[in-house]
Image 1 (cartoon, rainbow, N blue to C red):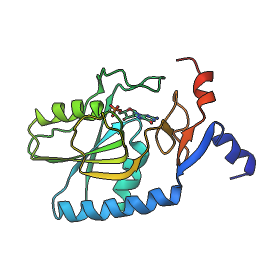
Image 2 (cartoon, rainbow, N blue to C red):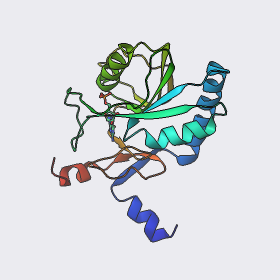
Image 3 (cartoon, rainbow, N blue to C red):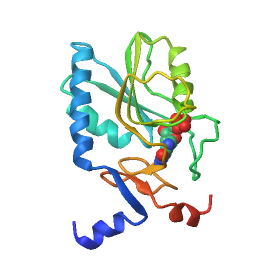
Length: 190
Ligand code: 5GP
């Protein structure tokens, strides 16, 4: 990539929190644990759109066991950086989860409300097992007591972007996780 292209992608980024290489190293570790966990079973990986797409595609390619994938979309913050507490299913699964070993793949757990809601929905469909892997989990006291079996990185309670995570629809294609310049947040109407 040219210097200009790199700078264009990074406009608004204050600080890189997790470098691209560190993400891939950690994903390889998570994938090995998942390979061991499922053995000869084929998990149904459920990616939570849109943020988990990047993590999901890297994670499934780092795993060596066969997997089936599907996606769900739920409403989250819109163009704001705070949770509304309101969660809505925008796109449901195509696969039936009954009797299957389901692996929910999340980009980030912040308050935990989105994940809690999603897990409630999935549990009512009688899967054989639900496991949750999240790339990022914010370290905060008031977070919901929600099931997360594997965490890639515990991060401080800051608004982050990159590696699938957006602000107002942008920055998802950054290969690293970074903190967004607050002046950019102020500039965008929410
Ligand atoms: P929660 O319900 O756990 O508060 O938030 C879950 C969803 O909010 C995540 O799946 C993600 O879409 C969004 N979210 C939470 N924290 C952040 C953040 O720091 N940056 C971005 N870009 N999205 C976040």
